[in-house]
Amino acid sequence: MTPRLLAGPEFELGAERLASHLERLGPLPDRAATADLIGTLETSGLLGRGGAGFPVGKKWRSVAERAGGGGAVVLVNGAEGEPLSHKDRALMSLRPHLVLDGAELAAAAVGADEIVLYVGAAHAGAQRALGRAVAERAATSRPRSVRGSATGGASSNARLRPIRQVPIRLVQPPHRYVSGEESAAVHFVNAGDARPVTTPPRPYERGIGARPTVVQNVESLAYAALIARFGDDWFRSVGRHGSRGTALITANAPSEKAVVLEVELGATVGDVAAMVEPAIRQDDVQAVLLGGYFGGWLPAHRAWAFPLDPGALKEQGLSFGAGVIGFLSAQACPVRTTARIATYMAAQSAAQCGPCVYGLRSIADAATRIARLTPLGDDLANLERWAGQVRNRGACRHPDGAVGLLTHALETFGPEFYQHQRGRCSHSAQVAPVTRTGRVA
Image (cartoon, rainbow, N blue to C red):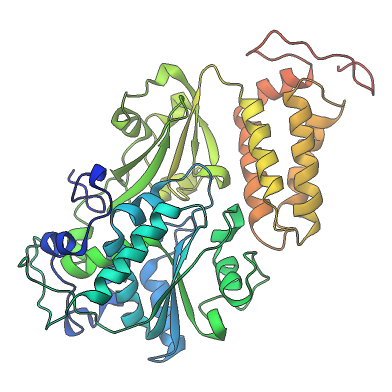
């Protein structure tokens, strides 16, 4: 399958410049050609690629109806706080004009008079690429635009004519897990605090400056720019199982090497493993993490033939999320891995409700004791109990995601947790000492 989002110059050349971008794809269609872009996006079935998987066309329509033709805002979400994800920064760093095309189209479609580039403070390369791309577009003459052909051909002298001139500004939220949540993004732009807020109202109702706001992931916007050029039939021409199109994923190999790939939705985990260089063998993997730290685990023997399809994943209680696939080495201790993730998630708390502040910390502490083979007598039972008590009680979804991953870990690696609670680890010769509450049963 030919890449779509990552087609173009070799990655070693860095960010694609405006001239190359226009030569390859042609200028954006004019206003008349994109009059029903929202309808086209709805027909395409494009889902948001930031984690929640909400339909892009439906989100834009909600803001357009609220804005009534003007006064809305487009927030380009490039926070990417998920530790295992690298795909958004890769897209911003390599194809910045594709992201800006999508932002410009969104602004025209919903009636926005401002675009905010919301790029994580740690993603310096992405910030530079987008900043230079904005400057290129501002400095380029813009005579009358012509529609690009179905193959993307255009004169090398073509110049981008914006559908609507909209001011663009760049903001840099802190590199934290919760910074990318849409209400946290709006809160940061409004008040300098990148923490989720209690809803309603949602950003599409009352967002930046109390205006209707589209908060859209950069990959979603890049795909909107391609659909605007080539149509919903083109988008739907690839894809297996129940989903259409391609998606960017970050494959984290057992060696801890991370690689960004573009795959056809519905491709299997085994297909992804074969795309990594060198290819990942099933025998070298004990389990696969799907969806990142808000995701869940599948044993390798089940995961290898499993389709990367949002619908199929949902049926299994899993999520495509931000397109993260983590391959856990057969030699790694899954209990220690779970404890590290639990500790990270506790430290990333928004610190605005008890389940997050106290619940996640207690869970992390108990998981760490179990992983170190120094558990208290009731630590394992408490993990299961606390996960149920924390779920659906937080001020935001952060605690739900954290305990969701823990629950999957307890189900997938149950025997390992049980052995650790008894003071033994199949990945080491360690035996737990006597604890202060007595010998582990």
